[in-house]
Length: 139
Image (cartoon, rainbow, N blue to C red; front, side, top):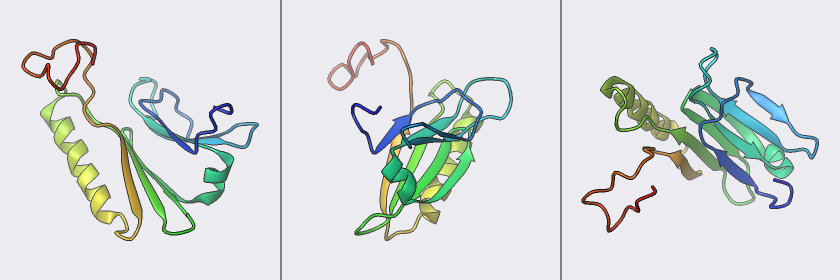
């Protein structure tokens, strides 16, 4: 992390329960996830020292959705980090996730620069039949 010096880095499906870590270099991790011992689900943002200082608001919404809001020179920046249920998940879980994501987007301040990042429908494997022109075998 120090070598590349990222300003904001997504961390898909973090597996720790803690909510906030600080590194010796001054960076930190914001985390939203489960509070049981299942060790699945959860999203995080890894922040540099500068981004940590620019943090205005942090809202852990669910085990698969969180917001970080940052002060910048021109406009505020809202980062929405998500990890959506896969296509094989229960319809109820998928509907709940996308409903919460829509509610989150509606509550976001319109003057902010909004970045929606994460994995919106992860599915590992080589099932790409009929989609070879846009999806590789190892997606």
